[in-house]
Image 1 (cartoon, rainbow, N blue to C red):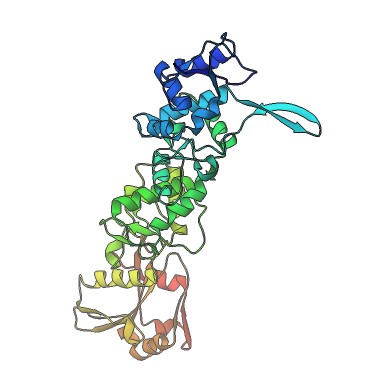
Image 2: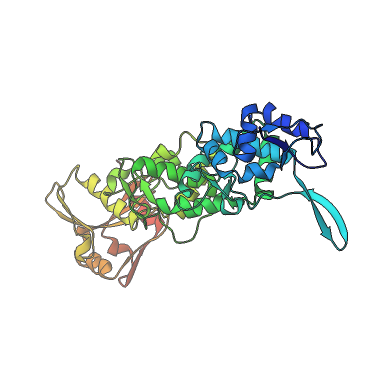
Length: 422
């Protein structure tokens, strides 16, 4: 005898309308209905057939939700996210009502589906909603799939196409509400996801990534986190020559419009590494401000350590090599001066170099003062002002003649009188 099935959705809704919606929305074909609800090929009885006329099996929508083999097959089929999104919409639009009694008051409310393994994950598996995480990020963001993929390595994540495939924001909001409210999917803030998943990948505490991977993850972190970063962190950074270096070894390149810009005259200071402009993709001025702040938080330096003084010495040596022989840097020998050079007339020039970013008095102290007093006309003070972008060179011969022995201060008016023409 052929078995017959009655689909009992709930006594408050029209059975034919709800069942027809399953077919109209492409959720179930006619020949799938019995299989979906019972696991067998049975028929659906006409709603006017009375109980007792034939043997009827009563089922409701929870039967399909318990049909693991049927749902697993749907999860493995092409277009699984779209199919499950339709199923969720059907469950939301045609709720199974159940009675609740509180303080002798009986009322009806939609049934929750927390106990059913019906939530589609990134791995195309099915899980209970309470075990699944939804990344709270607008679907228009291209990185949502990437974040989901990364997070899925350690957590169970909702399949991103479930919401991304919605035809409207209204449909997306409805699906999101059903998943979080009726199945128990847990919302995880995108910033928290980024801090847990992506940020560690760009920190120097992790293995050095490839240039392409590093730029991509850094862009995503910048987009999600902005400048809200933990204190004391340091990024890996891609430099202009394509190398990946710790942030503390790098400076912002011209493309970031830094102040000051050390790339302008980088030839006067060895060993500088500048951040690649590949991070920017032609962003506007506002975004540039954000990038500068972001990299500063990640350890990129505004100026190199001892950069002003070292730049000044390099600048002076470059100038001296045009006319002098045997230009030699001796700043680490504690002679009381930084450079020795032989002038065209054979005079040995003992040169103390002072670098400045702006106008200020110049002071010679300690053995610098002693050396100036000892060598007199053979001792020169070179001041490089306007480091690093607009350097100008000033020279004072025998600075001991205009200062005090113990602490020799050279006023601005004095050292500026010695402007050297390029």
